[in-house]
Length: 567
Image (cartoon, rainbow, N blue to C red):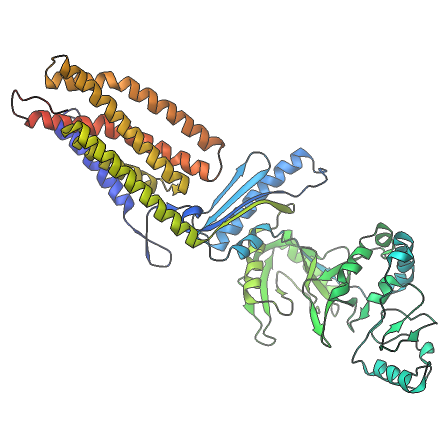
């Protein structure tokens, strides 16, 4: 049956109906009708990221790195699914690289932050800070030894708008060299200047500019200011890089009290017209980590303080750990540490169990809380990652690419059809019809398989159009040779198709193998080109061998008896 004209027309009609159905606009998640053809990020805008495990020293064993790559791939995929990007491309390339392509996103910076955020969560108790305060003189001396006095800038202690210091400065201005404290005591006998983290040296003097300077180098102590909170010190925002340089010294890390660690606050706080960063003294052993979380979110706002928070639920094992730890520290501060930054440090008012909440820092937005809930639900990255390649395409550039692609497509089709009809006449019209069937099959195949059309994919379409026409040219030339040899039209057509078949198969097969190799080892746009080329080769082969022959069969059945074939 399939060899008859009717059977062939049924097969072609069914395929065209299936492709037409695949190309019908579909209803999107927002209820609007959307095109069935998915466009790549180079056509509709979006972001391309290539990330690798951050291992600059190469100390991570190969097995551990391979495992980290696999877990990172799963975590990133979960995060993007939570983020809500439609049809993302997330794949591993080689042994170490992960490629993330997000087409049509409105906020690339937010998506990038979600992808690269480690999201390592810990709950730690804030220490009193007294042992750290006592260690400050030794720490200062270690800094001087490590860096040398000539490399340390003596930063004077400045405490504006503190009543006690204002009186000191006023006394200095009125009485000459000696300043008096609030009770009339000499300034050099005052235990410590308000806001200072440690006692001043005995030779403290007051300069004319209202700044208290010391002749003894106290690098870190001079930078630290009292916050009024347990285990928390303030450092002016402009002094944070200097403090970080001091704290990174190996000699300083060795002098930090046993069982304690120092963590920076995530966000600066404002006070007295200046911006400060909080330095926390924490227990080094966490009460709970993100591995003990079972679920998180959705984010909400506290109606009392209007601060965003993220509710979470722990596992059963985590609930037992949390309950045991918090029951011993009721009334203490508990720091919520995310990626080595303290988000907040609320008071433990009661024993906490399976359900609790993460209070965001001052100035945090609800969207930041929602993103935190998202990455916590998806899980933390096993290792920090680094972005080795980043590319962003704007929607306007993508629209321009689509327009230029359409122009190239139309010009190519018109030029080919004009030449085919002008040279082969009736046979050229058959090639035109077959080419129309090819286009429908190609686009329907892309839509039905869910393939993404990219700019290189458009190039693949145009290339496969050329291959489809090339197959028709081979067939027509073979038929013309048979007609010129004196054979009957029907015999000439059958012989022409049979003799051209081997050349067409060879040409299409070699191109098909090349396209499969490109798909297997290529990335991003190269894979898009390969997918389009594979579908185009299959569609062009079908249209040239099956559709064109069916049209010749109809033509031969209806032509006048004894008339010559027009080719």
